[in-house]
Amino acid sequence: MPSFRVQTPINSPIEYVWALFDKDLLSKLSPPFPPVSINRFDGCRKGDLVQLEIKLGFFSLYWDSEITEDFQSDDKIYFIDEGRRIPLGINYWKHEHLLEKLPNNQTLVIDQISYTTSSKFLDILLYPLLWGMIAYRKPFYKSLLTLR
Image 1 (tube, rainbow, N blue to C red):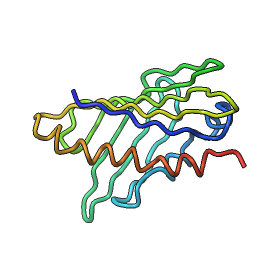
Image 2: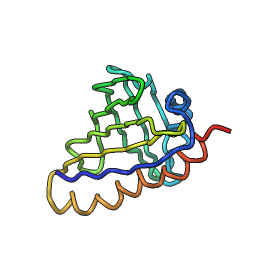
Image 3: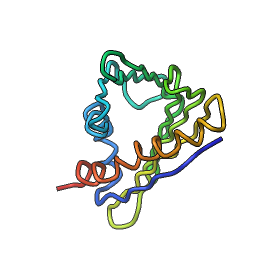
Image 4: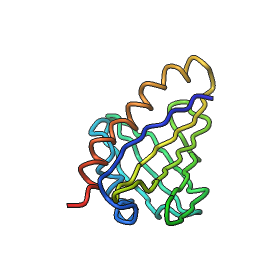
């Protein structure tokens, strides 16, 4: 099963970073192409649903995820979204969003992705696209989540 991890240190305390994980942040993290509409965003707690519409010219792809787990302590906060309706031939999608408390009021934002498709070839073909989609977030995390 392909998987990858993208880590971004943020110069803000974990509580501040966590408070900003909302629909507005998700909207700002989406790449400009293809355009993405957030049709539903319940939140980041177990049982919440997120529904995205990816617009490709005259047709749309739909990506629905369910938050299947969440946890919060003084040192760590995380939630996991798992795909329920996923485009691009992806059969399985798991995205772990993890915030870890670092010294000096800093936070490490970690995106851990695991996925599978219907073929090993498609797994390999999609890897750079999916990695790029998540790595694209790094500068936005830094600018949007840094305490000013």
